[in-house]
Image (cartoon, rainbow, N blue to C red):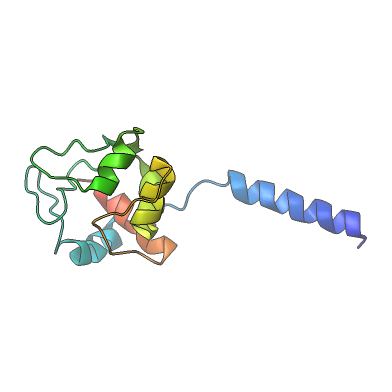
Length: 132
């Protein structure tokens, strides 16, 4: 295979991967995984813990959980405006502070120190949260 053919193959493969739909999660497994999150988050509307209630979290506008005191890093990112959609949550759950820094355009920290390492776990948690 010539160099140009290899390069063309690699480029085509990247296009296919970039346009592939996001991994679909398993809500039942996400519910099991959420037990790790439950120490700091509730899935009951209006019940905040160390972290805000995650009832209705998917699709929620930044910083809108009533009665929850957001940290400076989250508030700095909120000034730029964003919605906690699947794309945001996918990055945020992997590294909360990095995602807030990216949005805010400055070095910001999240109060949430917990990070999910596996893409499957992230997809499963998001799928579960979509049901709440």
